[in-house]
Image (cartoon, rainbow, N blue to C red):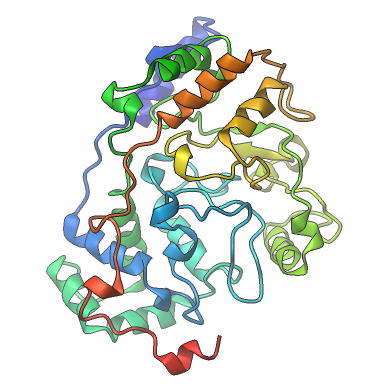
Length: 357
């Protein structure tokens, strides 16, 4: 899918085609996954024992009831810190070429899983300890064996969670099912035409998966709230950013290569499942889809290079309707969500341990 679409874009550029059309967006391809390994990944995704102080699970920030995001402008983080970016949804994340708002990992979801589990500001887990915790649970022992994986290991954990993420793909979005409203259809015409949105939001994910500078206003809470600033400093220092103690701007894609050229750039997000994942942008500064459309209609922010769209109120409303039509059925049922209540063999965290936090 990715290779074919990349060839198509290259041909369009060679032919001098400046504006992509409705033909350059489409439904997601079907993804295959191993059900038994995905079941292990699902249980792990909701298991707080994967964090150092059993304080967090992956689902603590990627909540199924909120589109596998968290509904907050800025994310939570490991106790003692707070996050400095908006939590992205992990629905359809298996189709991405690069992950995180800055695109700093462009290999595979195995590496993403490892970073989120081990980084001190996220789940702060030593994977050797995690492996021993998993091996002490007879349910995991059986699940790994039944999946043909033998005994649990940290490497298999890093593969199991991505296998589960393959199951989190959009379902029955009106755009895919052909059941869009008249307003949404009108919005699609604006999206691919006058609005020019399709230039960056293209392909099945509605994302070119590239870095762009939009000039979104900085979220000052990152620099005014000590626990968020601590996490920001720890992250920028570990990424090798110059003068990180005095930095008052999210460096974004600057951590990937040339600092000056990519300062303040961020990956084009997927537009799928937007209905469930407000607020928006890398720092949660835009509260609603109406705010997002208004932001672009005014030409985005400083340094973006984008021109005002000059859409009428109706055109903006239609565009919002189209964006909403890219969201499908909520993935919050038993097929995608694990719970202590349905796992009779799960041994929850003891009350005496919870009392410590």
